[in-house]
Length: 400
Image (cartoon, rainbow, N blue to C red; front, side, top):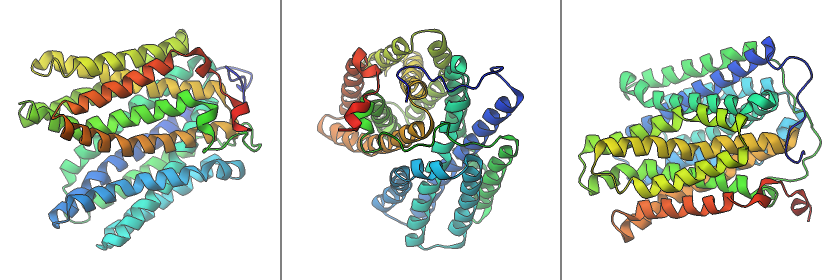
């Protein structure tokens, strides 16, 4: 592990043909997989709704995959020590195709729970291997832009799944076949990637459980961003309706926010390459607080609301982009893989806590409880981001 900068970059030109092809293949693979994720989450929910399932059952099925992600995260670092990266990704793609086929062939709700759980296990392999690989091979001076491009592309891909579902409908096998075709396409770019083993395969000096003590700033950043994303995505339309907006306007709140979350990642990544990474993170965290305070105040003025949500959501999402950049500066090899797996765990915890705490808060203070908890979460992280001592990994804490 390095203290501040990653010196594992190989000598020679920054942008070789193989490096460009590999990064393009990895971003393409995971982005197409993102379309698949965002296709099947609403698809299965709508099918169950049509069958008369309760909201509790629908919600439980939706959360089964994140459970698989969190549990699978603990296995990834050891797997990556012994197995080559491209083979892992290809295997993951094949397993996902098999799982989609299994979903299509059975109506058993119990089987769907098992399949979605296994899908979470497979998905975490795809995400952690891809992100670790990208961070390690991205040229140090360009890493921010690479991570920004990746997060922009991935965010846009999540918007395409529901769009595809609107074209395929939920009846019959068409959406399932579309998902299998997408996964097959996701695997094709890997033909052009190189092979990958972490730059260091020694046993990590820390594990996922102790990651919080090694890099508390990064762990809390993952939690807070997921807390905000899931609480706001699930409850902001309800907030809009309760303050008097019509259904269309309430939905547009999410649209403009999500577009900002996608399009601002590349400029934020560029800024992290050219300016002090710490200052960029502090700026994103501060904007997250200001935006959370402002958007409830301008909710009655559409133009101001859309602009505020675009900028706020984008800057808040930038916290995660900068967090990935910091992970690349601090860790390498299996330790980087362990850090990225830990990101998945803390993201999952935040994703669970956000809608739950946000919903309870809205019940206690209807509807402004949602804005209040987001302001508190963003404000707490902003305060932490100001502490210089949190910008160095604490390896000694992991060994005690």
